[in-house]
Image (tube, rainbow, N blue to C red; front, side, top):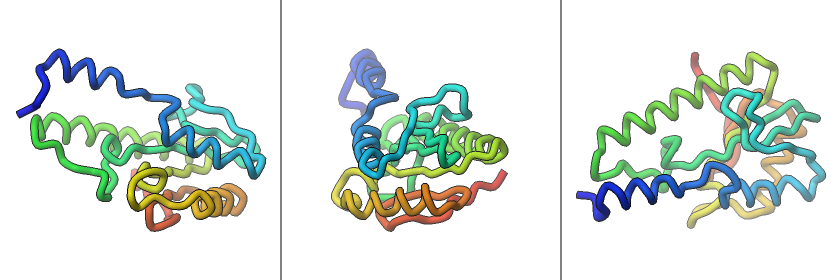
Length: 158
């Protein structure tokens, strides 16, 4: 049973931001010191990447672990309206895969930075996260993800 009535829950859900989130702000602060020039929320690209670093032909998404179903301690299956939420989150996951495939077809390199790497009890330190970002941006690689365990290849099957 939800602790809020339908109107209150709806108001709360509408208040969840889609840009300038805390995790996006933290990542932007980490991209500036090495001198990476980036644009944000480029609507002309599939998925509207959170960061586009055109000089390196790469895009970066900051994914919330709940909304994009990351297998970590921050993802919990909702106890109420479970089927609704699983379907909604499942559609997000499918859209994410489709966007990564389209970006790769257009020649973009794709990095996903998971929320758990940026906040929470197991987050990476600023120095560890900066190292991983710089390593991937400058070093190449087609698609990768960063979570609490570090950086890993991103496997997307069409």
